[in-house]
Length: 296
Ligand code: 0GY
Image (cartoon, rainbow, N blue to C red; front, side):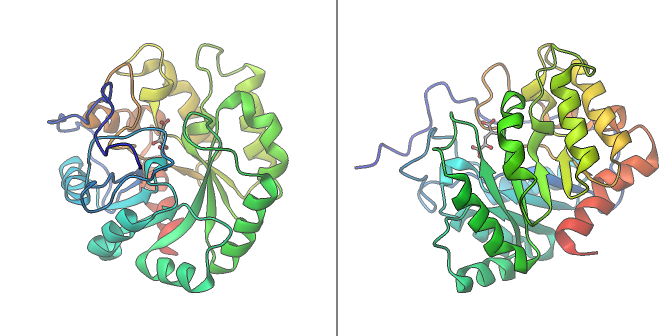
């Protein structure tokens, strides 16, 4: 029997009334990293999950999108739903052209299932390397999954922590697709941008033009807390060095935050600090995600 579908006792629920951002996103802006959780009675959490979140459904996500001044979402399958993508697909179908998705699949996924997901708006698969979130999958299995989705023009999203980059690099650089790294590869921001750890990530992007980065989640990386000043130099470096390979997202509803729950409005107000010109903001929020997810 699965454990009850009741949120973990230490779970922090998303902000109930975020501030209205001061920063006005350009027309057509995309929140390119967010999730839907459940609702559990309709879309139960996976038995193999490592956490049970609060429900955070598509209607709440779409309301937040509008409130923050964004037009589109890229919804990323969260590990609490495992390989059961029903909540994601339901949200994508409801959003129509206003959302695209990143799914989690096994190597047993059929061509017909992939085509059906593509029709719903899925454009990528996610590989998660954080031990606290997902069980280990052999790299040859992941490579076979990438080979399977490549003909659809999909990409691979990878989530890992900076100390693991060295070990994972051979896999990432052998994938036949575009590879999108979540949250800048989670640098340790106490080390400084000149530290070999962050420079190894910059070097990865410099050497491999198919590798992109999300400059998201200052709230996860920051040691100082809001307004996340200690993360700005990292994200700004990536945005300014690789302006046509960066994406931004809220990460709503912010799974597994332990220190605090971010105010989504304040997260939006970090954008002009990491992308200080209108041209960089247009690339980050509109042109790049539209190219990768909407093919335009
Ligand atoms: C994120 C970060 C986290 C969780 C997940 O799929 C997930 O469960 O990605 C995390 O706990 O760091 O990007 O949402």
